[in-house]
Length: 191
Image: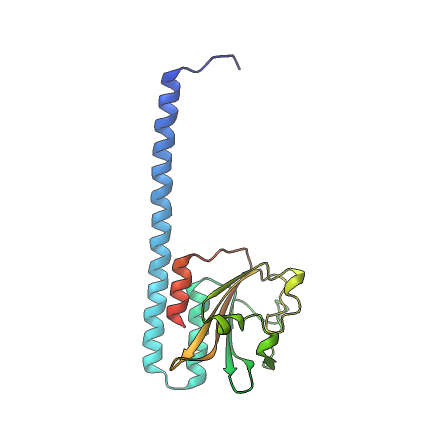
C-alpha cells in the first residue's frame, strides 16, 4: 500500500519461491501421470488375460468396450462393426458408466450408412480421430453419435482385421477433454 515498498531482496525471494513452487507442481503432475499410466497398464494386462481366457465373441467385445471405457475413465465406449461390402456400420457392443436409461442415452443397434456416420471418418483416414464439441448443433445430424446432450468429447479409432477395416472403437467424455498423443497411441494399441 506504499510506493517502492519492494526491493531487490524481495524480488529474489519471490523468484526463489516461484521456482520451488514450479518444481513441486511439476512433480505433482509427473506423479499423477505415472498413476494414470499405471492404471492404464493394469487395464491392458487385465484385458490381455480376458482375451486369452474368453472364447465367446460377445464376451470379448464387451470386455473390449469395458476396458476402453476404463482406460480413459470415459462415460461411454462404443464398438461398431463395419460391413465393407454395403458400407454400413452397426453398433455391436458398448459400455457406459451408470445406467443407460437414466442418462437418457439412446443406443440403437440399427444399421447406419458409413456415408452418414461421423465416426466413419476414422475408416476413411485409417487414423485415430478426436472430436470436440459433439454436444453442439453441428453434430446433431450424425446418425452414429449417442443422443446424450452431456457428451462433449470423443476419440475414435479404426479396428482392422488382416489389414482391412472391421469396425470402429470410440470413447466419449461428458466433460471437455483434450486427448494427449499418449492417449491416442494407447487407444490405437487397444484397437
